Image (tube, rainbow, N blue to C red; front, side):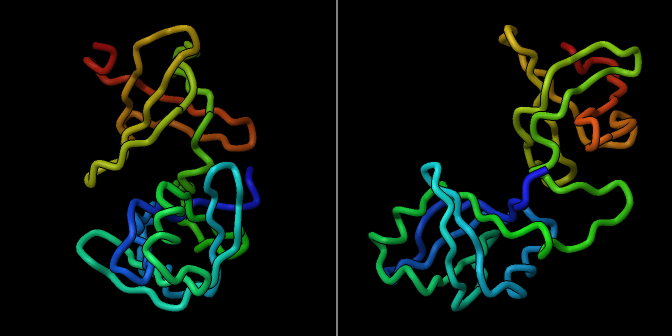
Length: 170
C-alpha cells in the first residue's frame, strides 16, 4: 500500500487568484478543513502545498493554496491528484476501504475464475462501480460495489472475490 491516499482531483481553477476546483474522492469533503498541507501529484511529480482557505461551490471543494497566486499558476495543477500521508487519513469503518487501495486488485469470481484487475472506479452517487479489465481483452466488466456482488476484499493479498449477478457479463 502507498504511503499516501488520494482525497481529490483538481479539475480547474476558480477565479483569478489561482484557487483550484477539486472533485473530492473522499466520503467526507469537509475533511479538507482539517488539513494544513496537501501533496499534489502532477506530471509524475509530487509537491507539497499549504492550504490557506477551503470553501465550497456546488459539488466542488475550492482550495486557496499559499504557493499559487494566479490563474496561470493554478492551471498548471489541472488534473493533479491530491494526496495526504496515510497517517492523516480518517479512520475507516468495517468493510470500508480507501479508493486508492482498490486499484490493481486482482478480481476473481466465487468459482475462482480470474476476471482481471480493477483499472478504474466510477462514482455514481448511489454506489461505486469497479471497472475490471483483463489483459489482452478489449471488453471491460463493470461490477457494482454492493454487498450482493463484493464478497471479500483482501488488501494483503491484493485480491477481490465477487459474485457476478445475472446480466453483468453482457
